[in-house]
Amino acid sequence: MDKSYKIALIGGTGKVGRYIATKALQNGYQVRMLVRNPDKLTLRDNRIEIVEGNVQNFENIQKLLKDCQIVINTFGQPIKEEPMYSSVTKKILEVMNDFQIDRYIGVTGGSLTIDGDKKSMINRVGAKMFEIIYSKMMIDKQREWHILNANKLIKWTLIRLPFIDDRKEIGYIKENLIDMPGTKITSQDIATFIINQIENSRYVHKAPFISN
Image (cartoon, rainbow, N blue to C red; front, side, top):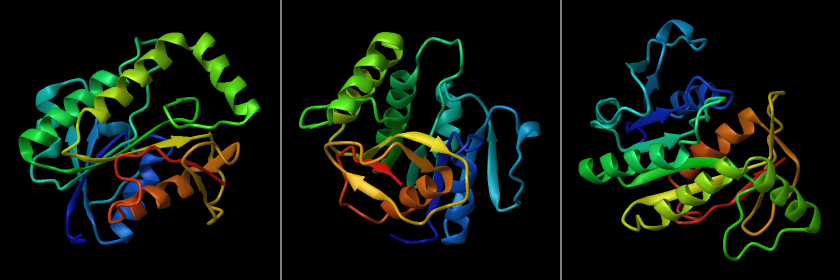
């Protein structure tokens, strides 16, 4: 893939997003970021194009994605609001189809269980606890998974994450398609993995677990 391509980044102000933006620029990609409040940006780089707006606004998503070739979505669920992962992803994919953008990389929690998983006992218990305590969120995450599966023309990858650690990058990432291989991963290692998926088709239409 041409490294001059432009990435539309959603969730760029979060724990992982700022590292994704930095690593994308280091790898020669252009970056356009959707930001609700630009005044709160901690990452300042005049190479990053900022689109002010809300991820729930269809026109804002259109403005963000126009002329982009890759979409990276690390949107974080706002506290105390109704789960919206599935509705946000649905809007993004609709605009991608309209603009004929075919590469999407998103993230979700390791508690998401899908057909083919063979989780260890401790991971099954953990997933069940999430289903009980965060039932609405987990229902919405399953809905998002089904929305992605219905979009076969888009080359999507959904990365399942353990607990996120904001320490220094470790540089070693475990990958597994059927079970979470560890309990933590650093924000910078997540960013590295995501950027590496842009030109890698190994996990297209798949949901790998990753950890340190």
